[in-house]
Image 1 (cartoon, rainbow, N blue to C red):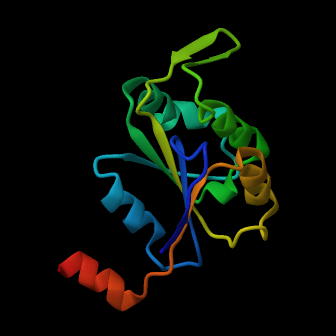
Image 2 (cartoon, rainbow, N blue to C red; image 1 turned 180 degrees about the vertical axis):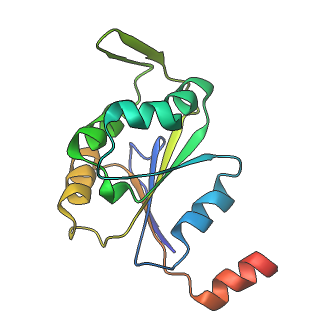
Length: 146
């Protein structure tokens, strides 16, 4: 796995690579006890908040977003806002305190620059901690079974 970390990587980690290389598994091993949310194109920012993002923000936990490349641009914009280091998120009467330890751990099926939405996310965040996953089945088996 290769890693690139810049100044905004303290709240946003993106594991990327092709199908079946262990992105989600790697994220779960690195952030045990994290809530996982399966990302769907139909999700709204409210859906994302209600399915565990808000709880993670308030309690300072990591939340794993599986398939973040499926999210709409409005959801990606929400992630940009809550990962930029602020201590509160306020929108339409909603006021959420963001704990300093809160982290978004995202998995994505893409190679940098090939998916328009993820390219937008990486361009806007610029400092995300991106980690390319390329585990082989043998590597995953060795990790899982010792």
